[in-house]
Structure formats: structure tokens, C-alpha cells
Amino acid sequence: MKIYLVFDDWRERGKSIYVTEQGVELTMGEFHSGTTFPGSIALDGENEAELRQALRDGFQPVFWVLEAEE
View (cartoon, rainbow, N blue to C red):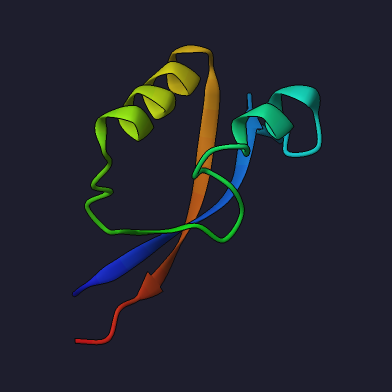
């Protein structure tokens, strides 16, 4: 089954930080509401570094799944 991961929100300890200073900063890149990635989340080096740093900083990206047409 082919899917797309659609970025929904940034959270910290389970709570949305989307409208906080940190959330606004994190959404300046590709990780903002509605951005869609293939199910394997293939990222270029810059996006991978951005995501890894956010994860190390304790932030969790939240995605929802959309079925891709075959």
C-alpha cells in the first residue's frame, strides 16, 4: 500500500507547540501543516539535519496518513 505522510503539527511532551515561538521557528522549513512526504520520508541532507535536531531538542512531529493512488 502506497501512502503519503502529511505533516500536521509539532508537539512537545504531547502538547501542540505550533503557535509558540519554537513552533513558529520549526515551521519555517518544510515541516509545516499540510506538507506531504512519501511513506518512507525521503529527506535531503538539510531537511534530515533539521528533523534530527528538532528530535534531539525533544520536539515530536505529528503526521497523518493519506492513501496514495496506485
